[in-house]
Image 1 (cartoon, rainbow, N blue to C red):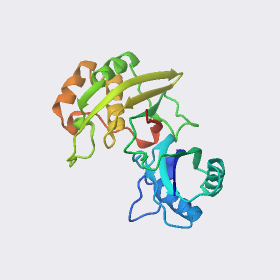
Image 2: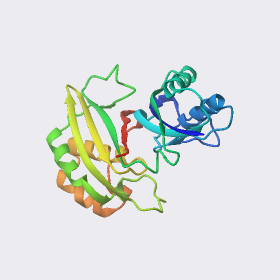
Image 3: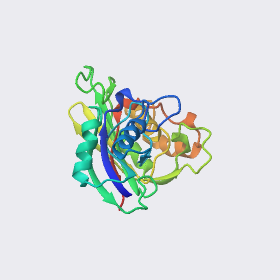
Image 4: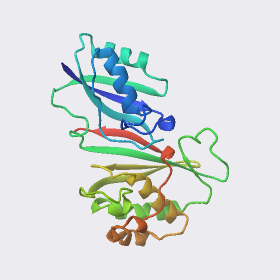
Length: 246
């Protein structure tokens, strides 16, 4: 049995997220496992680097699986892509050590949230960007984001109120990239809680709209209550960009 790491891109618009569920086959993981199992001729489990929400996209999701494959990695990638639906693609594949695990060995991740800030709708980006009509104060948003850098308890930014494990995470960088009406917010950190990036983004949008002030962010963190933070930005604006292992 060889262990392979695959880098995946997918449009999450029609899927119920990454993680397989007992009541539906309509998840990225379930689709992959069915196809990899067909290729292997035996039931095969696919491990992802993390769960993405229903409707969330990826251009750099990492996953791994063990399979008895006699061909080259390129041949395995070609076989996989020939069977995947058109909204899921394997970008690269490589054999990795037997004990490698895409989730347990991940060191950091980058998520990108895309906002379209204009009175005109984003016709060609409507499935991949959140349309925000009200003008956003970019400087205030960037100033507010600084409060989230470093290690903090992000309980206020976690949608799972029954979370029993630690809600402490470290954010290494938050970068803003602008291209006309489009704003991309790049979040890089050692891990993210359930809907954390979407809640961070919603809170920053409220700052940009003038409903909150940058100096309020420290108090939001300290409150450790979901009610203290902003709204949850829609899933279709979020994309898992890259997973880091070194």
